[in-house]
Image (cartoon, rainbow, N blue to C red; front, side, top):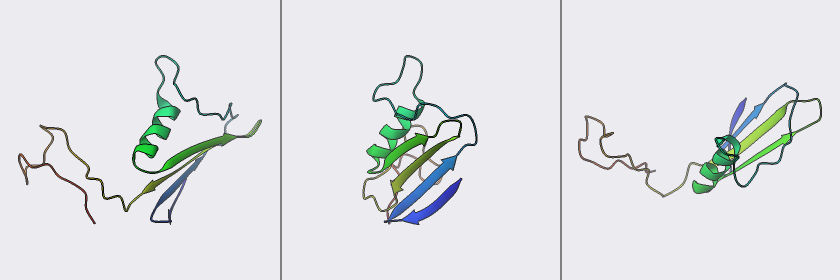
Length: 94
């Protein structure tokens, strides 16, 4: 696994040494499965991206990039506030 700063965000790459699989990330997950398409959707919601590739008889690689300069606030669900700020709606800011 590698993590690096790149273009105002974090680039994360995870490489496996397994047998590999079909590398296309489906647009809609199979019933009961959410993994890879959910990763892509979550990255895109944060202004990033996620990609996957695999080679025959080799392990897959997942790589994603997330912005760390987003102006969008991160909201915490009611009941999950910290004791330091009860009732507050925390946001990540720069």
